[in-house]
Image 1 (tube, rainbow, N blue to C red):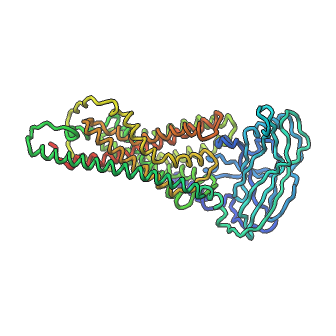
Image 2 (cartoon, helix red, strand yellow):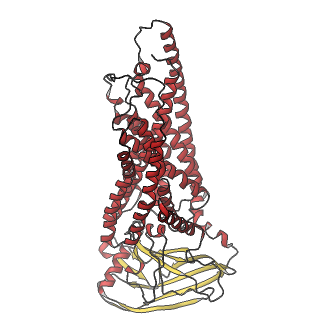
Image 3 (cartoon, rainbow, N blue to C red):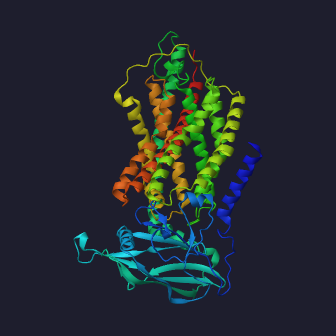
Length: 593
């Protein structure tokens, strides 16, 4: 990989560690009376469109000319954060009462700009000593009015900061807008002498500094929400127990009968015609079509599975606490880059086992199978964000950093993994010999074809996770905070178990029908849950959210398509691995000529 590549990995990890453990502005959070405490404005945007956010000063708020943009880590930029200093001076334990920020005239165009923002329920987000603050920039008066043309629009011009401190540290902050200090934006006309003011009130508290972030995680830990979460877990567990018990009983009984029947057949006439899954023993380990694509899918799915496990490990040790800006995005980029060797090794070693010859092309396919569609989707969505001038548009410098990570870390590790896989020289372990010519597959009813089988395979795993999906969607595509990672991890384990069991069961029924082309079928059936999750996206967008507009819609369906595609690859590899273990086991248990 070279010294430059290692140096880049080290720099990324230091940045990642800094995002997790160290203060974003480098201070230790301790202040003396009168000390300046950093206050940054982050972004503004429509409340119901979480991806559609803009820089705070894109709206004509008070500007002094001394505002400075804060240097941000990779994850913060990917998260759409664009922090800039504000004209509000909230020095430690220094109270302010209706302090004037500026007095200015709003032109007709600026009034229209503010009115459009108020109409769309724009909110603002700030960070004070790394604690989040948010509030709405204005309000709409709809009382007693049925016609939207009669609505009145008002802009708040006075904000009150209520700050709690413990000794020399800031513990909590909230912002309240004064409903009596507003500007009427209803008409298209200039508004003169608009005084923007702020108030700062300080109060001592017994809450310790170490517990100051607990306030933001409590909302998802309320008894009502926990009750629903545990209902989700119990529902999933019952589904799993019933399913696994049902399938295990049937499979064990059927297999036991099969083994006894085949043993009796062997003791009886040797020329007796074989039936069922034993009949196709000479074809069941015949390598699949498009084996390069199959091996690449397996390699990419295994890498994504490893990435998910690492993310869960970080979540369970408390890395992704609420409003730890960009930590999740940084972790995803870094861990994906560092696990690319797993994809290379898995894909190439399996491709060699399948007697593939062009392992270099297989390695290129593995590198592009997930990253390719993700890159194309990113290019389209980033272009949309640039057109909208939204903070979701990544600066050129950030794109360059990601390209460098891909070039200097991901690609070399992928190649190293591929070389290791090629040199492993492991052979495919087939318990029975494969015949020279494939048997013809008998005609099968329509419900045994690929698509109906995928629908059956995807429904049960999806039913085990759909309750939890709402909370995840409300967190990723809304403003709800999700912190109960232990429950999410249990749901993930349940998802894996159900996926494995249902794929194994369908594989058995397929083999019993003398259909020996089970390789791709087991992968597609395992991954079909990803398609169900994408179907849930449609339901969530139209029935459970108030998202609107081309940008938000394209971001939602575009990035969810990439996530569901990742789930398809990951669960597909789980389904195939489970089926391979099962098929090897049953054919090892019988004698075949």
